[in-house]
Structure formats: structure tokens, C-alpha cells
Length: 116
Image 1: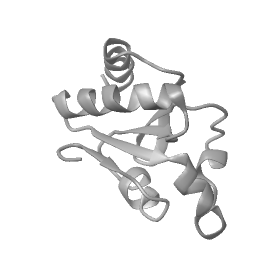
Image 2: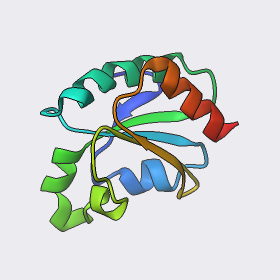
Image 3: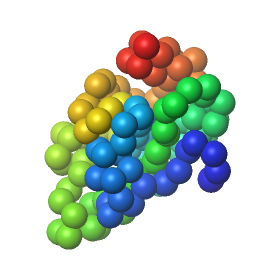
Image 4: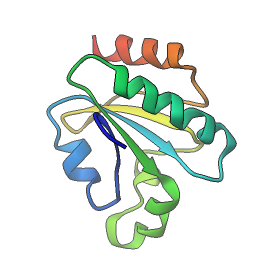
């Protein structure tokens, strides 16, 4: 993955998301989840095309859950009940969230309404 879309690990969530001055759009997903497999390419496409100082990151909830003992369970901390889920953070604070598959158009509207 290149550009403004990248994968997160449980080890860098704090630094890359919570300590970022720029808005960060996080997709919580898992490879076994059908709607997540549909959302991921649309999320990546939108993130690459987005014109602005916004980061787009992917957080595999399976990886996070496997590392939960060491790093705290990030999905549980943010009360992720279903995936795909998208949360927009800025300066360590949650600005907005949505869940379920979103088309590129709906995703764009969600990001614009939250950040602008």
C-alpha cells in the first residue's frame, strides 16, 4: 500500500492515530468479514484520491485482538461492535464514526461532513 493509506499495528496505533495532528480515518476490518472485503478496496481508493491533510489507515481487528494482552484491546476500547467500522480521530479525540459497508460516495460524504 502506498500514499496516504497504510496498515496499522496494535503497536503503532497510539503514535499514528492518537498523537496525529491531522485527522485520521481508521477502518476497523477483518479478512474473514465479507462486507469488510468489499469496504477495504473502496476505502483505499478513496484515501488515495482524497485531496487534503488526512491520513487513512487500516486496522485488522484480528491482529489487534491477538495482541490485546500486550497493547490493550483497541476495538473494545472504542466499543467496536460490528465491522467494518470507520472512526475519524483528530488529536486523540474521536470526531465521528459509522459502521457497515459504505460506497465511495457515502464514505466521501461522511469524511467531508466530519472534517469540514
